[in-house]
Image (cartoon, rainbow, N blue to C red; front, side, top):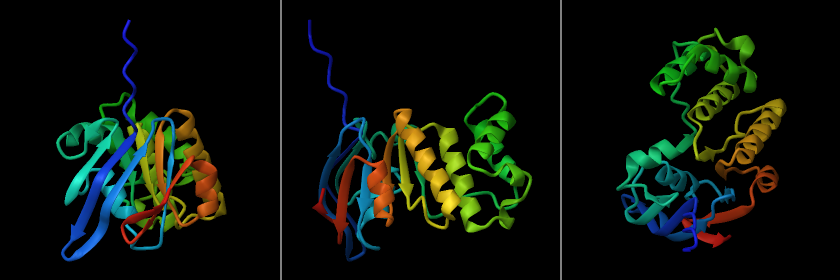
Length: 220
């Protein structure tokens, strides 16, 4: 009897470089993250963390090299990868004139979910926005927008969650809530790739660490 094939890594970065004009945001980066592990990305502003997350999330294509998510190339299998990943970015991409509940209902319908309103209400409770479910997003603080954005990510039920500064703009209660959500994602089998300047929180949540400096890996 043949042994079962080994599962592909959650993330595989093969000699990846990314250039913006004359500036190299990433340079000859290679890294492999096994399934069942989560990754903390650290580095100063401009080190390449956000660029790497956007490559994994298919928002960008590498200038050189290859990025794979769960065995799927992020360029040639773009739609497959997009079904596997969800990105929490600096930009929330929320509908400003819709309420918090309406924002989530729209996504639930796009995903073909049954009872979109019930799904939306459950997630709003999870992220602590129940009392503001009927408020338009344009009235929200930056921290409230971050909470709503994470609710939208959770609705997608990704295999890989890409979190770019998830603790930014959150108050202490919001940080605790985000830590709990990340822990629950990991417990449910989701691979978390987390970029943050809050090193202590990140180290407590992730088993692996990749430190970037000027687009290169200097510690892993």
